[in-house]
Image (tube, rainbow over all chains, first blue to last red; front, side, top):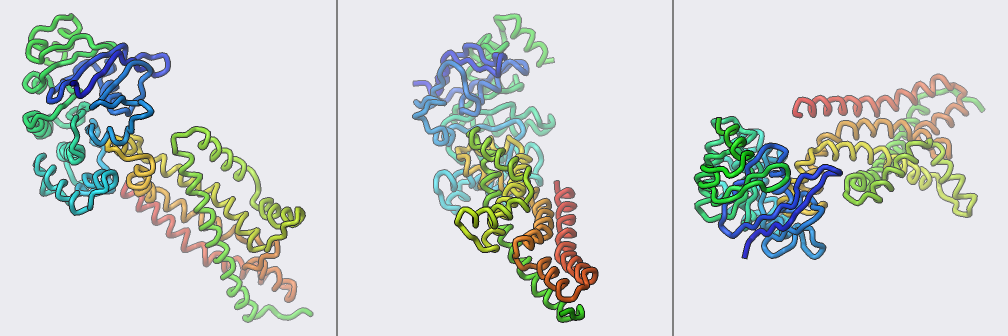
Length: 243
Length: 216
């Protein structure tokens, strides 16, 4: 059974259609790289999956629960779906440890001590255990983004969403974040990434989804789709980002 | 019988300051409670409640505080609900303070980027939890300087309670004037005593503001 089932989803901002009849299934353990120009709807699609954006038509089912359904507890669903944003969005008034322990203690009633153990564990996974008592403004962009990933991991999600998480970083800092993603990929995490990192998509993506004008224009196995685009739009896009 | 304005009168004025301070404290607590509700209503997602809060602020900011004092003191008495000057003043100042503090705090809450709410929501926190753990702690730093500034306004405005017979600093000044017939000396003393209360607070507010800007 797919972990994520997106069926004929349409999303509009007023008269502007951002997602136009989009369908996509994601199986557990898959790594989906969503690529496309800015404005193609790829970030919006990601934000619809955990209900940050409402949809006007279609259906999104995550882990057996329909997003946006009255019967679905969106808060509980989001505890199982982590999202990492382009601009990190750490809580600047809280230490790294508290950034990570806040959600487990508040939403799961976990003790501060138990949550700190988890914080230590997830920080180790992103290579920042020595920063546990630092504050976000004491960290570089790459470190902040790794803390943001650790914060999501602490909720033990079944699915991780990444919204252009390396786009705001200096080139020399993207490597450390991609390495964390690679480790997660190897551990079998189901991931959907909106990304401009074509190289990462090729090596680790089980599938590539190319979005254009609010539609899924082309999709398929990462290696073959990127090597041999079937549409002129994907070919143009790849030409633009690879050069 | 007219007597001299002497040190004993100054001591009486100083003693009356405690009622000014007490009314300020009550007004700040009452206004703070109302203001908290108004500020939260302004940022919560259910639109009709937001309109209700906007309406409240518009009505209160568009009417004089003095009129509210009269409404509660004279108005309620007419309809058979006589209230003490204390109660009337506490009610009027809470309504007034609630509107202004509500606006100050709404501004502070809205100054926190939307992405902070979103990051909380994405972790499974509900509206109240996002507010409590993420938004309010950051907004407090922004809200503190203007809140202290409003406290200064509040101290000065408690003098309006003199009009309904509440004996605080200004009313005590009126009484002293009546018995000494030295309005200039008495009211200059009264003004000076207000200044003693307000000036340190104003300075504190400015210092907090500079610190907030330096940190921001």
